[in-house]
Image 1 (cartoon, rainbow over the protein chains, first blue to last red):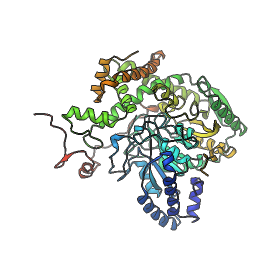
Image 2 (image 1 turned 90 degrees about the vertical axis):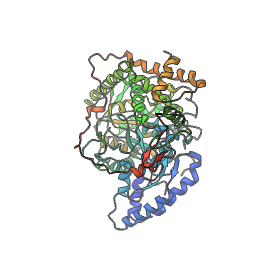
Image 3 (image 1 turned 45 degrees about the horizontal axis):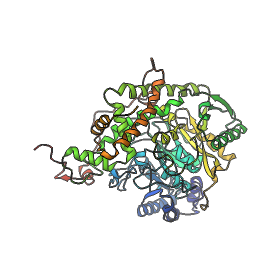
Amino acid sequence: MHNYTIAELVKGLQSKQFSSVELTQHFLARIRQFNDQYNAVITVTEDQALQVAQLADQRLATGSAPALCGVPLLHKDIFCTKGVRTSCGSKMLDNFIPPYNATVVENFEQTGAVMLGKTNMDEFAMGSSNETSFYGPVKNPWATDCVPGGSSGGSAAAVAGRLAPGATATDTGGSIRQPAALCGISGLKPTYGRVSRWGMIAFASSLDQAGPMARTAEDCALLLNCMASFDDKDSTCVDREVPDYSASLNKPVKGLRIGIPKEYFSEGLHPGTEAAVKKALTDLEAQGVELVEISLPNSDLSVPAYYVIAPAEASANLSRFDGVKYGYRCENPKDLQDMYCRTRSEGFGEEVQRRILIGTYCLSAGYYDAYYGKAQQVRQLIEQDFVKAFADVDLIVGPTCPSPAFKFGAKGDDPVAMYLEDIYTIATNLAGLPGMSVPCGMVEGKPVGLQIIGNYFDEARMLNLAHQFQQVTDWHTQAPEGIL
Amino acid sequence: MIIKREEIEKLATLSRISIDEKTITDVSERLSSVLNLVDQLQTANTDSVQSISRPFQVSQRLRADEITESNQRDAFQVIAPATDNGLFTVPKMID
């Protein structure tokens, strides 16, 4: 059953080929069997899952259950789940049990989907390798000596390892697309404002966006249908009709104009990754799309701009973790300042502390204009690059990340080397555009991702192209050794 | 560019983070490395470029000034590190 896609599971559940309880038991058994190898799941909600599955079976018996009713899923541990620990991968929240659900979690609960548990992640979503988690690194199912990418590495590894057919994730600078690429699955970051951020622990509020991970574009469409909604509780959530993302998957792609940014094929791109992406472009061309070279001239400034804006917002957002109302508090503080300082230095890991310090520096008197003000102007330049490009093309396609999965510790001493891992994904977050990654090849036995960037709120067209690509390729059906 | 020790100490105070004396050199080196990366921003010509703080100029919605949340003090205090009689408690601030 673990090799079925979500679309196939929906059919199987609705035709009574199997029950939600059977399906849930099957995936819980897989988590028990394989999670020691991957460390992808950090909380398993077995009793709750089986109760919800029983209720889902009752709804399915009526013949009018929603599409995802009874489908088991995992949630990234950044989404608040009522009564279930939500750690954000941090010692700071190791004991945090939220009294409410995030809107994304609530949407899945309403539809009758079954939460199997919560997935591991880089601490507070800060990382590109899942090595910063308080709960230890996640291992890539394709090569367990390599990283799964991050920050949604637990969700990606769980889907690749068939511990769940789909999972929720979040993307601030590439945290859905990069791990999806490194783990050989499909993942989509929607337009900023498409999915509610309410109850999703904030990292950088003007960049964070939740999205789905699954093995196919078709499954991402099913999950996004449930995740995307207008939410009055998130003041940046956009009040705009949510289309049926499954409805346009089979539209012909012939005649679509696809922009290929020349800056995404320059120095630093692994030759194997480049070859796989170029082969994918040839496959798309054979389906009748028109490839057009474009330029995004300010691309090289996206990583520097991001590493001002994201830490600046993080330093403000993470000021709430002070040991007063929830989460970790240091032992025997001698006074209030000591409590704040020791709580934060004992509760946060090294990378989180580093980003708070950088953000504080960029926002401090004397540096604000030179760093934060300048970065916000550069953000405008980057956005305008895309606006100009989309005046001429329907979608933009290129590599998701510069190289396949790297070994643990390979970029440990140099934060900048790790930050450059997101060189092709960060610009879309700065511009607020949607982007996705689908598997498009293998290098040294490890997957390569193809990135598809859409215009604002054009997720349906991205999913259409991705789905049609998956009709003529089989990269998305491949599995790590020993999985099938 | 190298961040000086005094600046690291000031940042630590502003951020309410204790930095161990033994690690201060490492922290300084790594922060300096990141700031060298972000210094590339200075190469951009941003004369007459308007800054943006949110994508596609999205503006935040306003809502009616009405109370929409119920009192959940008990639920929130269950997860607090220290409470007393309905209050969140912290170390004594004033003698």
